[in-house]
Every structure is written in structure tokens, then in C-alpha cells.
Length: 174
Image (tube, one colour):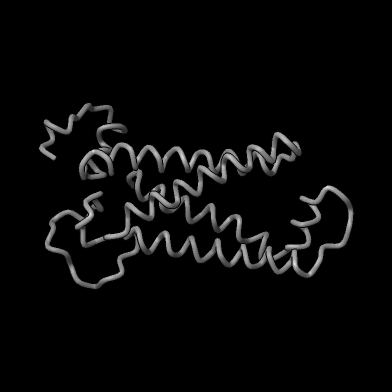
């Protein structure tokens, strides 16, 4: 599995992990995160469940728009099954914009949860900051190395980094 698919699946999984407690027990989440002991309001419960449905929809849209799950039943003319950063790639025309938006969301979430952790000291914010920070760094790395490198294929980028070989863009011919 290359970096792009790992990023896509882990982004969807992270959104799913956040969805489960928000949907199943919003009162527990509100009680844990509130500074004073009180009963949660109906509006707070509604907003927790709305956030859960939004995160679930965002996870599904991320997986679909990146081409991880193909939306068409026709085979493309290209011989390779990898998704490229080329905007004309018929397998996933929205892969790069979706990755850009999700990486930006993870970066903003990491910054926000870090600020909340330093202000409140709750360990849940630290865990969220680490998970979002890791996903933001992977997304930004992929975007900088592949999307800005002029359509470099993801598999050659994976072999460049993970197999220990050094491949230059000029040598690769892309």
C-alpha cells in the first residue's frame, strides 16, 4: 500500500474514530470536556451529533473523491492502476484538491487541539493533536513531493522514499 492510500484510509479512519463517541454518547463527551459539572443542554447534544454526521460524511467523501474506491466501472486507457497527481487523471480527478483540503483541515485541527491542550491540560486534546498532526504532516509531505513536483507518480515517490533508492525527477522522465 503506498503513501496516498495509507493517508486516505487513515484520514477516513480518524474521522470515523471521532464520529463514534460523538454519535453514541454526546452527553459523556460534553461532560468530560466541560469545566463545570452540569447537565448538557439539548443544543449541545444536537451539535455533537451534527458534528458526528459531518465527520462521517467527510470520511466517505474523502475516500470516494480520491479514487480509493473507483466510482466508474469503465477501465481507463492508462496501463497503471496508480493514481497520479495529474489533474487530467481519469481515475481520480479530485484527488489532489481533496488531499489539499484534508491536509489543511488536519493542520488546523492539530493547531487548535494543541492550543486547547496547553490551556486545559486534558489528555484527549493531546491525543487529537498527535493524530491530526501526523496526518497533516503526511498530507503536506505528499502534496509537496508529488503534487508540486509536476505530476510525479505516487508509486515512484514511494519507492524513492521507502525502498531507499534515490530517484530524481529528471532521471525518471516525469
